[in-house]
Length: 223
Image 1 (cartoon, rainbow, N blue to C red):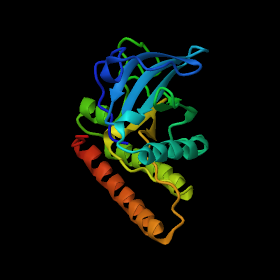
Image 2 (image 1 turned 90 degrees about the vertical axis):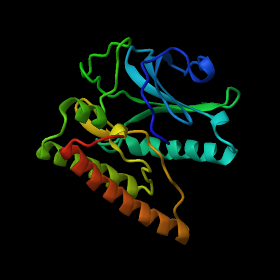
Image 3 (image 1 turned 120 degrees about the vertical axis):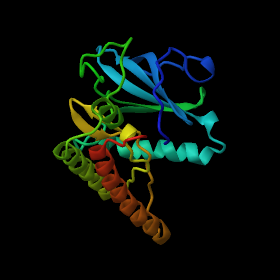
Image 4 (image 1 turned 90 degrees about the horizontal axis):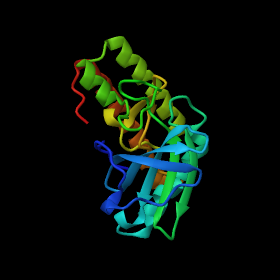
């Protein structure tokens, strides 16, 4: 999925409408939008703050890409909780009548207050916001982040999954731990052609990670 731009926040979704409620959660504020959907700040019935991504069928020209995204999240859900560098997916569902699927995940730290979340002012802490605030990262810090994310990629690839969009804005911090976010997954890589594409994607992921390390040290994160 494409990068989600973080707006100032509102209670309205696409086309100004408030989406249907997600079971067990109250949608508080839209905190990110992209080509295919939105990320909402949500609160569980137990009072925990979560992030809920809603992906709309109407943003896809055909059914198959929409279904493929849903199947990717279904496959990633159990995998996500097996690595400390993956964003944990806590709930997945869909509402075909309303034309969307959703997944609930752990919420990124706030840029200023960490785990002290104020719904009115919350802004997610990402690698992009980190570099924007500090100008550049110390080499040791950038190396630690990159090694952590390399383990996350290794974990994904071991389960025949690929993150298609590694960049600073798609790396969040949860309790200070860097994690891959905005998961775009490719599954079913059994065929020979798919395996060749999969191998290339693995190599490109590694290259992206090296570029990310260099950009973080130099303070040139722009996406």
